[in-house]
Image (cartoon, rainbow, N blue to C red; front, side, top):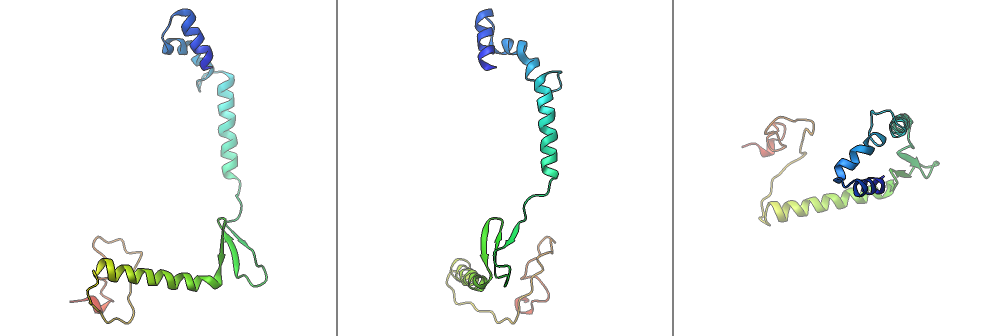
Length: 137
């Protein structure tokens, strides 16, 4: 189509936009043309495709013991999850001590910290949560 527009512009000594207007009815939606029909069918097909159920997000690789699965294309082994959580905690502690506390030896005694992750109140944090007595002044 672009070649036809350029050719028409050259033959008639027109600007590209003027030449484009001549052919516009053949590639513009909402105008009775083959292009419009194809666009309509494409949108209809896309809608149908989105309504179809997709593949499962979880596929069990080990259907006897259920210790290994594929989740969104990634292999997850439950035996390794405890190692993962331990490593995440170690990394979080190191970041807290080195980046937040700047290697100061500040220690707070606590039994169990409570944090309400659903609380969206302005100013809420685990440090202001009344259930965490260790952080109260």
